[in-house]
Length: 173
Image 1: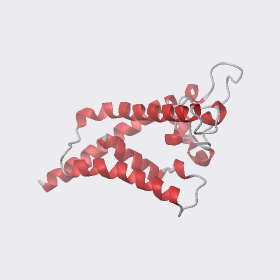
Image 2: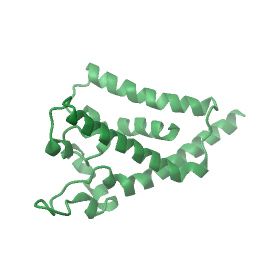
Image 3: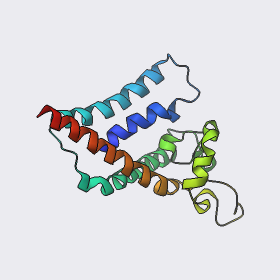
């Protein structure tokens, strides 16, 4: 929880996918960043006040927590459509340019400058439809497309977080 909370805030500062189409000084933008700031501050303060200690031994487990969160977000989107709170269907759900919370459905067109990263870290299998009448067309597999790049990136970021916070805590002791 601690590491994923910090990562989610940092990621939303760098790639604010939830803010496309919004003017900068609106309630939605303030709410969006405030919610992510709380998600960051709570775990950060837990580590700074030594209520939680980051451990190198847990680095390889953290991405699985992240994938669990992504699955919950995907389930939430499906439920919102099923109960009628979102006026949507399967085609708009899978479209990465519409309601693409946590980049579950791939990179939106606004991030086209990062296509080279996708080519390197996401296998073509996870970027195309394998079966049916649309076989071969580009479509990111929800959540699954993130497994390889997210695992590598999260492990690296968690290692850096452990290193930085352990240095800070040792300096204070």
